[in-house]
Image 1 (cartoon, rainbow, N blue to C red):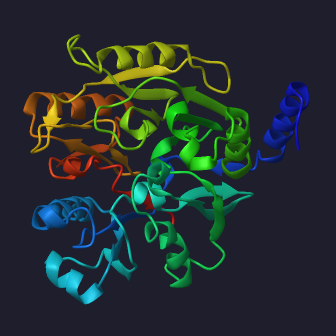
Image 2: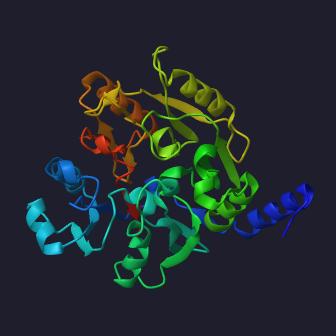
Image 3: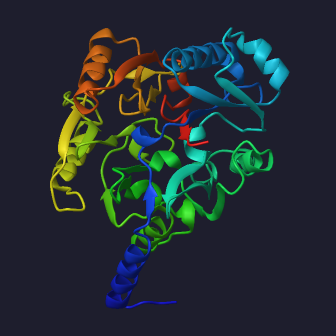
Length: 357
């Protein structure tokens, strides 16, 4: 159906009213389990598989030591238990599910509360706009539901709409922060307009206030500017963002424009946000001297702790950990060295999804 501009606006506000009982749950409110996928020989980790497994052991140990519970997707349960060699397995549920890769943030279920009922939304995943194979990852949530790894009635199929968890942030009050580069990518949802995408976000996530960030792109990022590499929403009407102090850095101007746009954003009540600047890590390169998208914004929050990616840069790492305490003063900050994880162009938040089951 074609709408006039006026009719379309009325229709959008009608959806906003109808979806006031839907809440996209912010990460810091989800007291659930962390969904991870173990690297294996059929993933892009195959050439450095031992290093990748060491990286995941470190992540898993940090979670267990700080009271988190884990759902771990593996190709073979018995073999994976032997490979991990972690003494305390009581906090881990192993689920045998095929995967293409380990980035559960982008294909894991997105948790909402709809009319006081939890739902795990299964959006479509097409490898970040058809860049990478995704046939197995796109079926993970369906497989979790079939294997009864999630409670009956929790799963909701919305696979006709492509949406990655790393591309959206919420304050839990109806606001979603995202980037136009990602959500308006023609290889994701067939060139749907900003208005059409906004209606979908309202319909499925209860978003009645959508902030579209037009700037910010990290060199080496394969996701078309996922918001979780750039800016994160936090309690107290706060946005943490990646800043750049080095005028000679090729990302300086883009991140400066991003900061300027963030300063103009307001919440659903018309109030400006409290902005907290995270440092930009010193450049990290792969073995071919290609710059990798290292960022401190890619942290994971649970009700207990903030798990902070660090990159063997003591001064910057410490500054980032101290900065995050401004937004989460009652959380324990747990640094996790992600120098291996970043070699596949992702970091800690990308490799995790917090689920309420």
